[in-house]
Length: 361
Image (cartoon, rainbow, N blue to C red; front, side, top):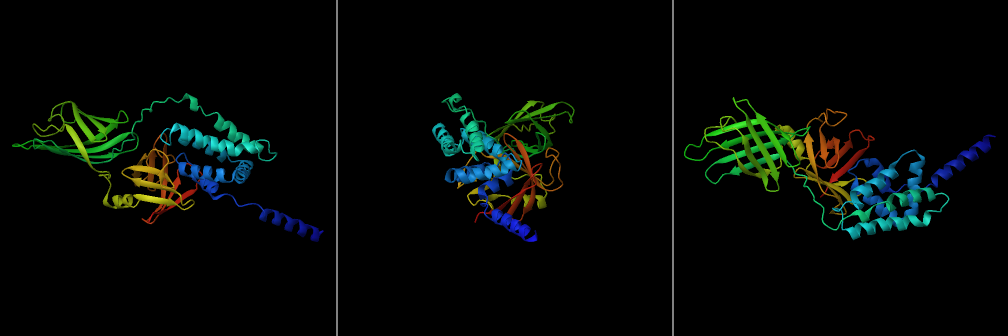
């Protein structure tokens, strides 16, 4: 009996040893587990086209383990790539969809992989490409608010506007203005403005006796300050000091960070290569996060905010530094490690996996 048991154990170990290793792109995608994992999803697509049977075996094992990563991959591929006009032309995106369908089609009647193949076919065949219009869609730029801006009024008046985007659709700001010669009166106004649209924020106060209302309107050229209500006195500025005008961007740095926190934020800037897939990368620059694959951007950049401590909008709240990424969805990552050479991020509320990167040389 002991000999038979030993033979059975050895046979089980032999069978386990014969199991093919899971494709590294699929492993990386499962670890990522977020709506921003577009480069990881594209890596799975490339591996699937190269070896559809092997990837479907990986999909099947994951499905049998009770995990829904296959559905997550298909949704991300559909919503962020195939139906995203920013990802490619209409013809290119239809071609990418057909490549995946053609790779899955031979396995639809396979006794083992048929169910997986049919899930892929059903999800991608249902994409309504025909509903797209030929005209270019209206794209609203994901503007970055944080930074320092300067004004040269042309008449000798000058100004500086410092802005930091906070949690909960608010902007902390400091406005310094100097009037025209010969008086060159000056003043400073600080406060918190509320975002009222994707390009505008409004500030209102009665701190100086009567109502002062300012509108901050962003564009690719900078930010325009418009006094909607009140005179210079109502806004706490010197006599004749009108802060209105277009302030040109000076930089993208958060002007309200401490020196120590500003140094930490600077360590995040640059391009980072995924430790799981050398073709996948992210770039953090100019207040945005860019998703890259094989050197090309795979979707429009999204706003990226650094917080010394994760704010209340990042549920659950963490006391560690974090990044808040604002696109179609808002997600937060705790900064596990950032030493200038390596970067490790973990999705708050995710599976607990850590995405690791090394700085591009």
